[in-house]
Image (cartoon, rainbow, N blue to C red; front, side):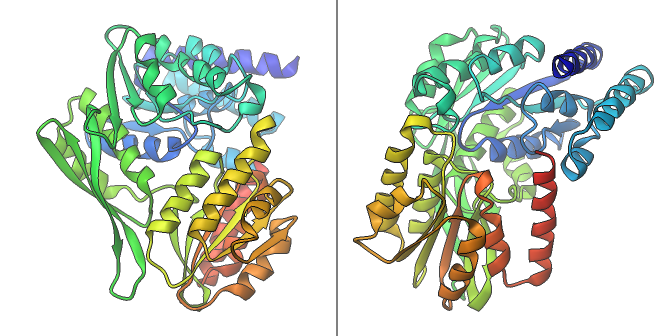
Length: 427
C-alpha cells in the first residue's frame, strides 16, 4: 500500500516536471547495449544541449522519476533507498519545481521490462520523443516472467507504439525481433546495425593494440549514405561499441547533428564500468571486465570479443546468467560450447554455470565453484604472464570480486570495491 502511494506521488511530481520544462525525451530499452548507447547519446548531445542521462539501472517507477528530478543518484547508490530518502526526494523536488528555472533540454531515460506491462505503464507517464530499441535476442534476460522471447519483444515494442508521426524510432536491424517492430509505430523509423541495409551502419571495426601487446580499445567507422565518421573508443572492447555508436549517431542525426560533429563528440566517450572494460591484471595480464550483468546475448558477445583479441592464453571466468526461466539449462550449455572454442581455460561460478562446464570439460580444463569468493583464489593462482582473462556473470554472482582480486593496481582495486559495495547497498 505504502509502495503504491509512493509510486503515485513520484509519478505525479515527475509529470509536473515534464509539463513545466518540456525536455526532449530519448527512451532506450533492450537486453544488450543499453548503457553504452545511453552514454554515447549523452556524449553526442552534451555539446549542443544540456542533457541528463539516467544513471545505473534507474529504469522503473522509482528510478525514472529520480532521473527526471535530478541530483539524487549518488545518495541512492551510496546509502540505498529508505523512507527518509524518499521523503527528502519528494520535498526537495517539489521545492525545486517551484523555485528553479534551469532544467536540462534533453533527458536520456532507460525503460525496464522486468514484468509484462512495465514499459506500457511507463510510457503512459513518461512518453519519449525518440525511442531506441537495442535488442531482444533469442533467449533474453528477464524472460522468466514472460511466456517467451516474442512476448518480451512485444512488451519492449511499447516504447515505439506510443510515438507520434513527428517522433523517431531507432531500431537495431541486426535483431530480427526488433527489425520486425517497424510496422508497430507511426513514427519515422531509422535503422542501425553493421549491414549496409541499415540507415546508419558501423564498419571497419578494428582492435587497437599497443606495441607491447596490450589491448587499448577499438576503432570503426559510422556511415550514413555517402557520409562517414571515424570513431575511436579507448578503454573498451567489442562489437557492441560500434553498434551503440551507430544507435547514438541515429539519435544525433534526428536532432540535426552532422557526422563530423558526432565523430568529434564521441572522442570524449570512455565507456561505462563493467562493460567490456580493459584493465591491467597481475603478472602483466589483461582483464576484460564485463561483470555488470549477463544475458545469453551479452555473454556470447563477450566471448566473441575474447576470441578476437590476440593473446598467448585466454581464460574465461563465467558466472550464472540469471532470470532465464525454462531456457536456463539450454542457454548455459550453448555458452559452454562457444567458450570451449574460444578459451584455453574455463572457470565456472554458480549452480547454473555447471551446464557450461558440462558442455566444455571434454575439450579443455574446466574448474567449477559455487561462489565468486570461492573462485577468486583459483583464478589468481592460474594467471600467467600475458594471459587475457574475461570475467562475466549476472549481477547477483558478484563476479567483480574476482576482478578486484587480480587487478595489478591495489588502489584501482580498492576504488572498484567501494563502487560495487555502493551499488549493492542500493538494492
